[in-house]
Image 1 (cartoon, rainbow, N blue to C red):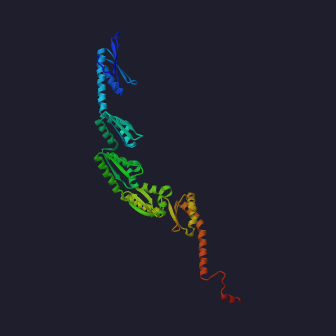
Image 2 (cartoon, rainbow, N blue to C red):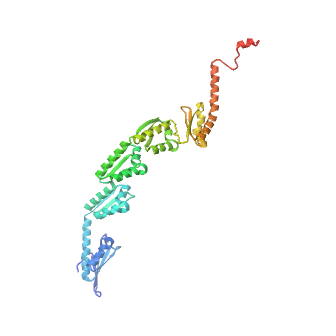
Image 3 (cartoon, rainbow, N blue to C red):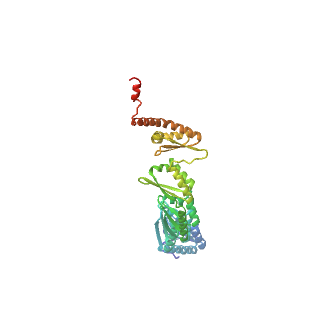
Length: 395
């Protein structure tokens, strides 16, 4: 009976069978195979029974002596192949980040399974740690690493500096529709690191080139313009809770970004020639305090004079109260000492009446004081008596 030093023979003479135990090595599952295919083949081809103890890593082969002999030969051949494989085995460890590892795995594990099936290597992907471990024959590990790298980053990688948040938002598009469309039409993977303006492109050389061309064309077609305003006008551009800025972007399809400086702010607009022109007009109206009239609305302008601060109230409290009470929009331009009221006719009339009630007493008092000052400067007085009149009355 032929066997090596790692095998032990147990003979049952009455049953006419022998039993041989073989050390199954560090990876005893090589005798099981995928879905039990290896052990089934061994039993069918040799006529012996194979039993693997996964805890002790001992393989027991039993049956008629000639069948067991054949089984031992097959088992030793499997062990020899495994030993040779391990001698040529290589291990590659890389850290690419969670997003890249997710791409390596693919939807439902499709990518990683395909890579393992094609190369025969073992791949351990840790999404949380962002790491990948590939084990197998050196040549196969190299092939698998290339396949994983292409799945994660594409065959070719490039970067495109977009420069501004407006450009980033333009490439993203509403609900990320533009960037998805670019990926679908070019086959290029696009990624912008959160908080940055750098676009990463990955894919075949043709896909990267096509995506780059389309993005450059998109940026060129939406160059837009920049305008400089005083910092005091930034609030008018944004509007209450950012309402004005959002409305202009939504209605024109432009991307607008405001950057404050020490005394002035830069308003950057990206959009087509037509949409940028519309955005420019709407921004200027907002800066000038002009509220766009809706159907059925009217606007009335009131002179406030020295009553401007009183109409505004502390931190705009009076204006806010008047807007809430009458359902109108009131824009007070302090530098011109004027207020513009916009809304339904009846509501505007009622608001104007309340504003006038605040402003008129102050303006009347100012006018009276001015008249008195002018009279004093001219030498006239309500208490002054003319000499001619005194003589006439016998004084």
